[in-house]
Amino acid sequence: MSVTMKSEVILDTDYRPAENEPFMNERQVEYFRRKLMNWKSDLMEDTKDTIEGMQEGARNIPDVADRASEETDRALELRTRDRQRKLVSKIDQALRRIDEGEFGYCSETGDPISLKRLDARPIATMSLEAQERHERKEKVHRDT
Image 1: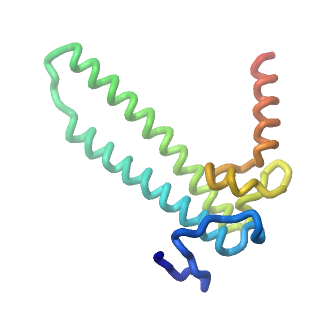
Image 2: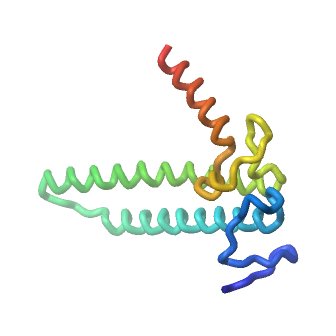
């Protein structure tokens, strides 16, 4: 078990937030900060690898079918990277909410977002119930 110090809070790398402890206590906040930072780091590394691969992969392919296949692969890779860029932005917003003490609370109701939901999707800004209401409203507006 590795342990590090941050703001005089001992962080156990095996720690998992639990419902029976105060919501968004220092350990939980640092757990989610670390989770978000690691996620962002992984995405940035993937992006770097993609850019390097695309620079190396730029070559003249004489076969039309092979060239079309490679172009399709590149387009797919670029769309994936664009989604990841947007995800990095959402991670940065979540980190800002941590710094501002707003992380873990629903932007619609102000109620705590469940730890289970935050662990699965730490960039969540709404409780599950508020998110479902939002999606139902969105669907109604889209269908009319």
